Amino acid sequence: MSPITADASLNFGLMIVEGEDVVRLGLWTGIQQQWGIEPLLFHDGHGLITYLENTPLDPERHPWIVLCDAQLTVNDANTPWLWQWLKQHHPTLRVLLTVRPAALELVSLAQQVGVEGIYPRHTALGELLAGVLAIAQGAIVHRVTPPPPPLRVLFPKPWDRWRYQFIQQGLEEMDAWLQALDHHLGRSRLSPLERLVCEGRHREIRAARWLVSRLLPQPSPTPPAPVVSAVRPQIEIISQLVDRCLERMQSDLLNLTSRPLELEVLTLQQRRELLYTILRQWDLLVRAMQATPPSIEFLHQRGNSLLQDLWEQSLREFFRPYRFALGEESDLIELLLGERETVANVYLKPVPFVAEMLAHLLTQQPLKIHLQLYRYGTAAALEILDALLDHWLLSVANGIVYALLNRCCYSEVIQQTFLRPQYTSTREMERFRNALSWHYRWQRWVKEPQNIFESRLILLRLTARGIQELALTVPRQKELMQLEGIPYALTLALEARDALAPPLRAVVAWVGKGVVYLLTQVIGRGLGLIGRGILQGIGQSVGGGWSRSETSKTSSNPSGD
Image (cartoon, rainbow, N blue to C red; front, side):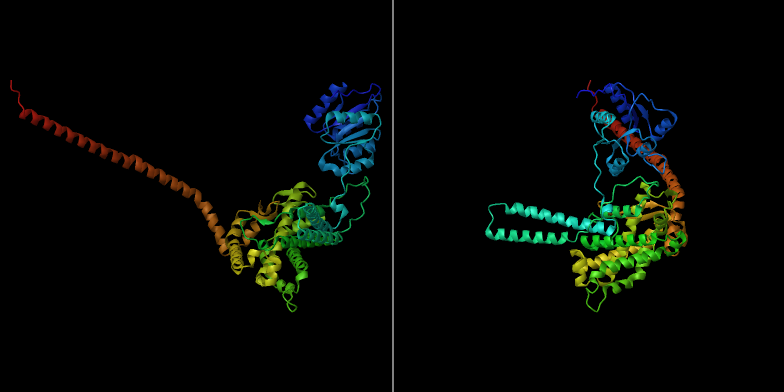
């Protein structure tokens, strides 16, 4: 490829803002080699702004072009992005942006404010320099198109987004079946009966697809391109949490923990439906509280009650279609609600950081866990909120399934509707319930006191592989002071073991050294001396016998000379 040469009549200026040293050096070297000019280089937007405010631009060079990354920011609430600030304060400057895949949502805003050039981040140098020349000549070059509106824009309500994704997945499966049937019907060697059956199935799937497509929620009208607001937009973190949680629910939800989970007895479809229902009720609960955010003191006082309300509303919503599955005179929902007190004590009361999480979401105050502060809207805060939300959902789900197992797990209707085939066996169900009972006894008397004493908190997480455990290190001194009875005795035993272990190990090591000395230096040497004496005695006995034998031979055979 021949080098690009700038037209001699275009005496433009070029400024490059690039934070990566390797990229900045590569651009400077390539431009100098191909054009013979040296652009102005800046490490960040602050350096460029300082230069523009204190140094007038060379009027003999026109136009001036700024090449920068689309995600460079400045400390300005009105124009948080560097290119926004440039277009507002220096409208004569022409801007060329390089856009990363994670920043595609900025393309439409950049087009609106009048950015002249938009290129992908990893564009080849020759193509990028050709764009600089085109912009210097007055062209508008946009090589990146705005992405389609995200689902949270088309469907503002999380429930509509979930319905759209769920139904769309079913439509795609139907399309795959139709394509497979079309391919099969295209064969010439089909019997009339087989062809008739395949055509009938083709018609059934098409009819089902038409009916299911009618259930797709209608997207809201696409909003116009965003305008540059005078205030930085507020981060909508609740929708992000819901969307991220819905993505994690697409796994097979396998139990990858070291403990039995009530949720695993349900079929995969029922597991997802239950978690979707709880997530929707959680979203409704939090958004209802957004109108009048309560104080942190209220949340600390009512945290357990809010969890119980979430459990009850989720149970009612999930079992509403099966309310009279046990018979017209038996209300399944009211039957399961009879386990309210047990669920509250065993499943909901141990859920941690309820008040802190709600206060963070409702009032945007930093989330404090141990000595770590998580500011609202940061990536680290999202990660810890994901973990806490997963634990919420799985704890509530296990509490709902516990009520089902404890009240009516042997009902044939319940088994056929909710349970996996292996748990329809009475023996397997009894084995699973016994495993659960033993787990919670062990957890109450041994494992939880040990976790409290070691300042360890175990959370259940939804991951791409399934349900896993996450261990956090947090102070639990208040819970430690409330222990009594056997759990408290266990912590004393652990403390005694920790206190006695070092000196006991030292004593054992000292005794071991003494035993080794006794065996090697005393007994070993004694045995060595005994063995040596035995060998000397044997030697003397053999030598004496040999001498007597020689003497007898000499006396019995005298010389005849």
